[in-house]
Length: 417
Image 1 (cartoon, rainbow, N blue to C red):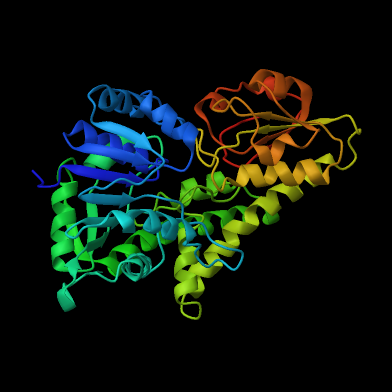
Image 2 (image 1 turned 120 degrees about the horizontal axis):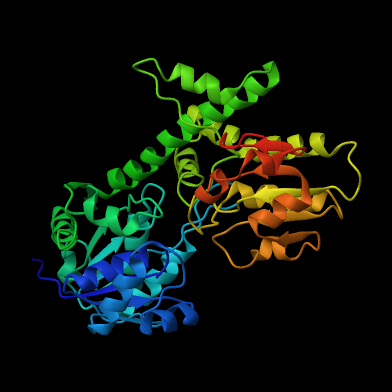
């Protein structure tokens, strides 16, 4: 059991809120901090603002037990877990302004001896940047107690969970803990041991940051290989799905499945952090990102080819908006990019979008007058061209008769016309 009893979790999004609720249901007193008053109010009612299996039950239980509360103001605590966004800029360098904002809120509350953990997926040395930022605001503190200062402990502990399985994998997955000092690593390990049943692996902070980036870059490179195969196969007139199935019968080959691109906050973002840190050395990682980033344009061009020669009133069905199957997470989704570009480039042609996991179109699409969110059946009935972008389970149940006399572009290989 950890000696830490009070934890503040900064950022109540897809990682922060699950982490806060699990800590609270394991006996710690947790205060969640978020800049969005609606999120704070929802948590204090025991509710959640996004879909994640089992999360609502955990949050409701933790709030009812008085172990979890939410606020917009950073409180005093024995430990802080920072789980805020880390997007990249136009030049693919990391935007650390959210981390700096969180640090600004934490700094005035520190008295000495606290543990500050950065969970946000971050470029190398982001944890040290956060530490320097806080210590710059509080010169009476340090990481080693030099000069009669009070010690603050900093660590990086990246999440390694899959949307849709967050509440399971937070508990069962192995965890990497990287401390700026051995003492910080030990404290962080003790805190995560409250709920983590997997092995807790201890290292330094920069190695921990790189480990998360490398994991997602490895997957990105493999997806890029599959996506490039799909483009090549289309050009020479063969079925990429059959090709990959046959190749995967080799005992040492396991090619992933192609798609319309790569989405989500991790795989679509993390490799760029490595490229930014070592631009001359990360040639393969950069190329994989470029291959995957180019795939949405390839899908859009396929739709343009299909539209050519059709009447102006022929409609298009786009099936799926989320970045992966069976979730409502739209972050960095290639399907969103494809839908927005088609809505813009095809003028007034009607685009019928079916996404069973959302109740309304995102802002990036809502402004297009030719886009409408429809049921699967209605979108299929109205449309001449059908583009499957996300392999939701409900889409897999589409019957061949529903696709008769329609032009099918299946980026996931799950439908048969």
